[in-house]
Length: 196
Length: 196
Image (cartoon, rainbow over all chains, first blue to last red; front, side, top):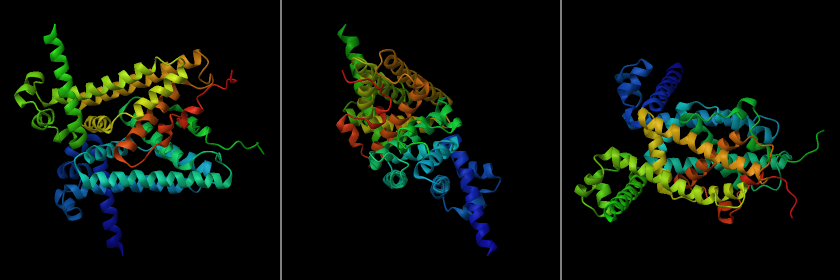
């Protein structure tokens, strides 16, 4: 059914353009016209896929979730829980600046918009649980320190990753540990196992 | 000179009202009228202190900086670098939700506003250096692990604190370690010194 595939691909293409425009101009600047100009389609085509600006902006938020989840699921293919945590953390922190800026724009809108506030709150809850599950897997396979509290550590991990993304999207803060693939903050989660 | 003191106090009182209103409604909702209603003064009085809405919003941002710096400087009174880091981290993470929401609102505005982007970027740089300085003090007095890279760890610490604040301002993510005053993520920064 090529027509449906085409529809899904076009929607994603437009959502990707919206991510870039929001990242550059913020939610207020991301008009239907600006997104149309970014992707080279007419506003008429855009309106065929999204009824209004709000639908388009929510599609940009869904696109972030899709990318974050894809990276996370790929990382879960690693042999141990610890390796999965490290791979997921590296890939997430390295996510592009526009994604972080879109996330921040929606967090800002959560003040004063109960529907967006609910989406953001549930997102934070869902992601914290996802990180906790992989920490638990690491305790089960012996790669993560059995003494850590997985729930509490998940809150820290998720918080740290978000904080580092903000530093690189809005500051000059570089994080050389990322390039080395050796995340300092992860080292103390590791189980003390003798080198085999 | 009571008149000058009065002026400074009134300005702060209005800035504090602006922080609460931005926290509740976002930057767009923080009109001069809304802030006037919040603090019980007329918009005429407000206009006497702030020429326009932008000046008022920037005063709210300065109020955040004042609070964060006050907490940080107080924490520096602790006997060791490690204790100072812990006290500063606890006090900062426990800062109120409105502060975090105001900070997020300004980060969001940084996309598309070069002046705000510059203020936010410099703020991230300044705070990262402040944390690095206290880590260095801890290495000098023997309370912080001599093997850590203070610059890189400061990026992590500052990122983690911001991430945890976001979790508690916009999510349900609770952080029980904070109530215990024992921040798990700080433990591994500690120097391995024998208990005296």
